[in-house]
Image 1 (cartoon, helix red, strand yellow):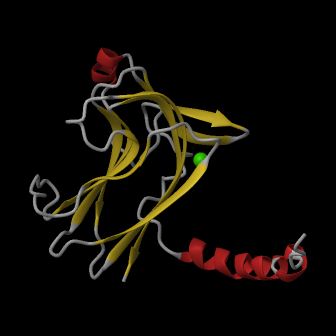
Image 2: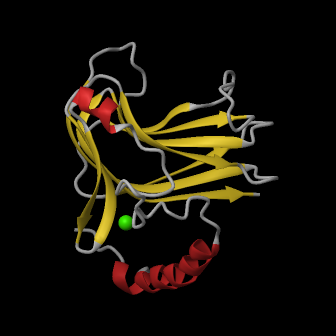
Length: 199
Ligand SMILES: [Ca+2]
């Protein structure tokens, strides 16, 4: 048997040191979506900071978007029984002047029941979609990286931390972040969405 060096003795103090000094800087950075913790709700009882799907439109899919809570913590929940279409809440954000990259971090918990077998439907899953725009009302986004950035196609074992860093395409001043399900029947929970500009 090979005797491994003691993890706790050698590494743990280092971890504590790193966490101690990493946490304050992470909190100090500006979250472009301060409501991303899903704790503040609008007049419809859904998290502020997002555009949520119209309930009448959702009813066609028998889908429900709501705020759910556990142990004093709220999160955004998608209950989608069909593999057709995209059910997502979106946040429209200006890209800060001079930002080279955008970092997006979030928590997701997925109970995936079925993923569409339609191969024409790219980027299926419980997903994050990012679309870049030059103008706030613009629809021009061709030729630039956009679409499904992250997808979860299998159930997760509890909450999972996710993080991506995206280069800002030249000339793009606005972005839309979409979270939800695409071509996937699932219960999908999202929380702690943090969006930061990196200079
Ligand atoms: Ca929360």
